[in-house]
Length: 356
Image (cartoon, rainbow, N blue to C red; front, side, top):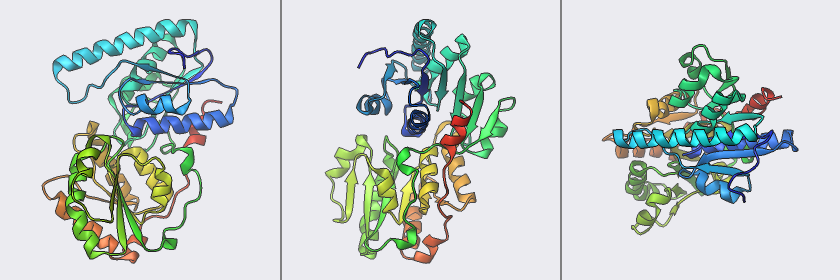
């Protein structure tokens, strides 16, 4: 595909770095393509992160820029990241003066920075979706200039004073916009799926590797499907493990895997939380420590308050606490059944209504 797709009159979707930013952008783009089949759609992302792999496979026209994140980096690395951000912004400004998009729709992550800042500079309408309870740095910086900020959680609205906020939930991919089998219809062998996010989660991976043999010996009607992330897959797959403990680097059909699960153990990224609500599956959430603004902990606590999940913090007692909660739910169908029923997700329709 061309390195610089045609942006004229296009809807530009931008968001990436992690699946939590990228997949909502895909969900919105899928909805836009259905609603306006003749409207050009182009993605903008980074040469790093999940979009660098997924976009070339997807068929979506796209432009990948050499930008990188800021969080938790040395002052020299932050300076280098700033230079790349402003260089990519300048390149888009130059391009969009000739090929002006109709609007820019951003779902967060460092890959969305150049497109949003270029749109702001050129007066191109831009819309932001903030999935998390704590808004990211980019959203805070450009919030007041956005035509609308679509909020995934109620808590974020109070953290963006002066912005035009609308609570919509978090968009989920098209595969999740369907009825899911009721949990009470699932039969043995029952399944736990473990989701560490698109990049994996080392502490969660290690905890599950340790506790899995004990739990699977104790509960012979259960198995575990464990998404490790690409980084940890090779190492973990070479270790000894229980015969009913299956490892995969990435779950390509996560909607089907969630539907088959009687219990989900996961990080608490906003996209995963939204998908869990749609599926109506009980979850044990282990937030990633050090997430920007501690948003994963806020997401997990919101899920707990809504009756969708249990929160287990990642600390020195992770293995013991996780094993205790998993055993309680694996051994008690009534306990699993008290979690909230599936919720219909209408976030895509609510967001796209603002673009008409």
